[in-house]
Image 1 (cartoon, rainbow, N blue to C red):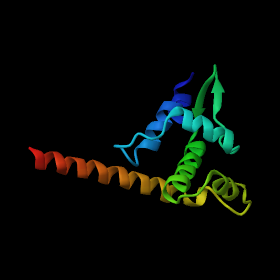
Image 2 (image 1 turned 180 degrees about the vertical axis):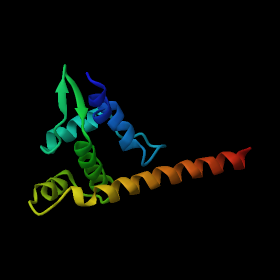
Image 3 (image 1 turned 90 degrees about the horizontal axis):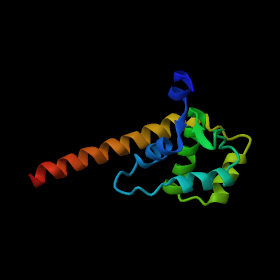
Length: 121
């Protein structure tokens, strides 16, 4: 595997870590969740090499969007599927906003945890 390939693709474990950044206390996403989402959303297409999954940036952005719609917006699997199957829906249009939102939530949780630790000391 080339260095470029390693830099541009993430393993299932790395993707799970990205998904869990938005709520560090609740590690609610597991590899089986992501594998299940692959069966429900045909748009998720990881590369499979020697039975290992590798996700590119486009897949990760799509997975973040699915997570946001399911967990934050309260949509059902069917609801998300309908949105993703809508030809006028552009995944790329909201990726940066969602990624930034998740990143901000993660950073706020880290700051809150630091404040709690400082108060306890």
